[in-house]
Image 1 (cartoon, rainbow, N blue to C red):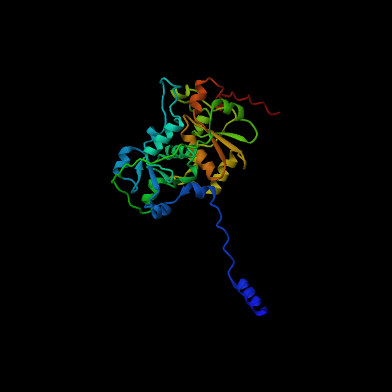
Image 2: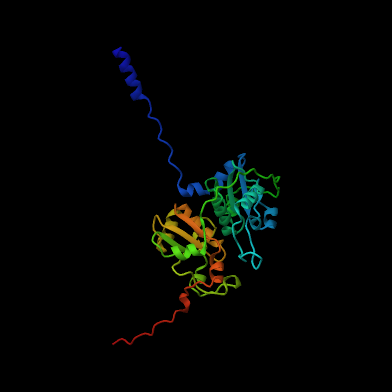
Length: 315
């Protein structure tokens, strides 16, 4: 008996320890895929690959199996119309479900979005819509888009896959879209940071907006500038995690802050918000953005209009 016990103890000690549970993916790993990953998973049965760009560009060449993501069909646009007249808004939950299902998305889908040419912010706008629809944990962006795919030696095609609609259950909408009233209340509150995703020239008031912005120059009071173009390099690849951390830190954003983003119409800001998501920030989108803010006649801060103080003589 004693020999049996010792033998069992020896076997226990000699057996390899069970492997530790795999570490959960970082926010960036969950949100971004590489061309190598996509090439490996291109034929997965549940993969839905969405090409964001011009239709003519898609027809000429796209990643095999990709469906054309009709950006204009996924959102509501009513400038000057019978509604509130805004250029870009989220549709109702049921309408969004129907639009996503029409693009082949089902309950089991693993969704990868990529852009052709330089359509970065339209692609991140679709990524935001997928998160809003409750599908964010199954949606990723291809880093660098089709440009990276081609540079890495992967093939493209002009063959259009059969357009099969998906079967999608009622959406579980996430409360990540906010209104002007929310922005007015939280823009300067502790733990929230309002970011302006437009080019810095608009934020600084050097360049005035167009008719959609009521031709107002400047930014929403309390906002900091995080231009959407600052999130990618000259090849439209996302900057490294450390570079992203530096970008947000320079804007005064701290770990744990909730980031509220806006731009001209609610598109460019989604690129800045997507970058924030890769760092684990909670993000919210002011969907009407500066277009809505200016039309409401709310105050705008214009640094370019400030009168410099006279220089005093040095005694």
